Length: 182
Image (tube, rainbow, N blue to C red; front, side, top):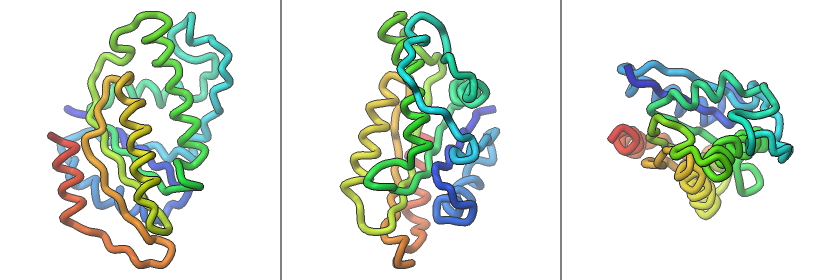
């Protein structure tokens, strides 16, 4: 059975990201689904200790189970608000902790550092119209996943959530799911 890993980078249990997660899950009933709420995960930041340059893994063990699930996933769906033109700090900490895989690839020669390929989708929501920020965030993930044996295949952007001037667009949602699964 294929596996979907959902990463919710929003601190809100009832926000727009949570609502879209609820809308996406039914499209993956044929998958085992695991969800991580990144704020609850509370990842420690990378401290550039260089442990991963010599060893598999990280000197900080707080994300060991998360990274097992990350490596085992077929699909990764990231749901994030825009905070100060980028990802919220806890999710940025996760991105920084991908250093363990960059070191595996570029210092220890693991090609690829993650065996199982991943199809990645990102849903970005913003209080205003911040399409340029959403583009930058998506491009950051595209660059990250080139080393992580993954490809960002889908994006769904929802602007203007602060004014409640947004709508959930079923056509865009289904397009997102279709692009992620292909």
